Length: 289
Image (cartoon, rainbow, N blue to C red; front, side):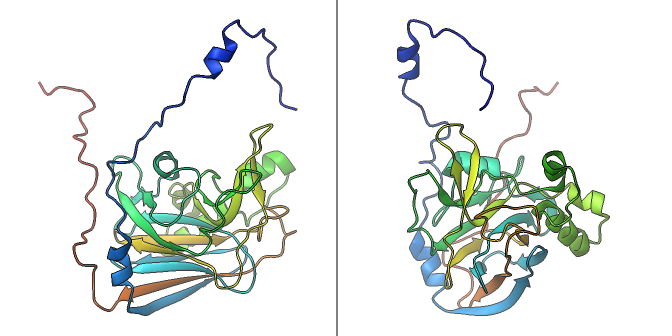
């Protein structure tokens, strides 16, 4: 039971609670998702590369702008933690917090993965999700969340009192360090909050704590993206397996994940162009002298 300071409810408590919420970031002005644009482009695809991500490990992959990539079930139910960077500048990377603010706690077809400030542009668009039938379950759970940060060895040490080296944070750090030939400490700076692919999560209704459930992913399921800019990705096959019991340990049964990169034979979609970075001036209210 969480500690809550005791206080007496004011006479207008009900009225205060009854105030209607306001959406923080109305997204009606964002570019409208046009499924036909992507459907036409992927009507004839060439497989460029397939990367197998081993259990409790991570692999990097590159996706040129205008290509598609899919993360798919391979040998068993498994969730994955996804990081994305601008392939030409890893200072620009996936911003899960702003993606959550714009699209919600869980993402699916038509939602975009946005980059961090000051760049603030779509990095990838989700173009197909075989699990979009799941919706919301009775516990408030959904699939593909942008609320969990990634399992990491630092939190594990706080909660469990020992070292575990195959948390997703460490997996992603090793993969990026190898890809960019960086020392681990330098690579770690660029590892960021993730998209939890195939993970089923939510917040409990009583204590409002982040929870996980057994992933509904099954054979034939995949999540597909369109690369809006040149991407460097890294995917960790989480040590939690399907996250039905535990993570950050050797307890769960884990499986590999598959990443496939596809090139449209017809080339870039007609009418599409890679998005520009945010047009904000960057002056932050300071007037030039």
